Length: 115
Length: 113
Image 1 (cartoon, rainbow over the protein chains, first blue to last red):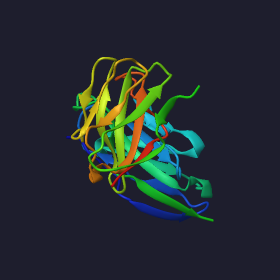
Image 2: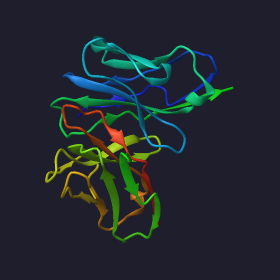
Image 3: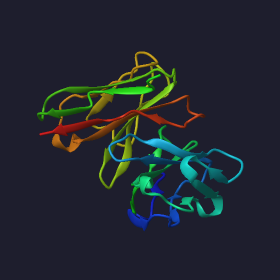
């Protein structure tokens, strides 16, 4: 079965620092890739997605992610974080032909931005 | 436009009781999903439905059942709740399998004592 690994479970940064959250998946076929964000007490919201084409995708709130097929990675980046970016971030994969429909999520990265 | 609504918002339930979590979407999406979110485990798929009248099992289906009588509603039933089912439950929908960006509801926080 496919799996998604998020390497950093907890990240603490100061405002204006640069951010990179790692995500690797284990499926060798065609995939769709997503990053979701969950602000405290709220439901998941889509940050960005990759279906095909340009492997560098831009999302909301200044976030971007790069799909590197050879590394099975889809890392999330933001050049300068804000206090309001404090949230839980989830990487997710949809593997075509990979079994049960639905997304496979990583375990999440809890990001805390200190003022 | 409400998107996806879930009810109840939260519930405390005695072990052994039957409970149905409700999910309704107004986007006419074909596919719907149920996930549970547990600390340190992320979200795990319980059941899904690609279209009205069909359902399938996800990663953690035991102890749960679903039905999809129409496009809009996708209830999740716990026939006899156990404490390990204490979790936050999220319903999601997407336009279809090949358009699988998923939209999430606000969640139901369930505590089984």
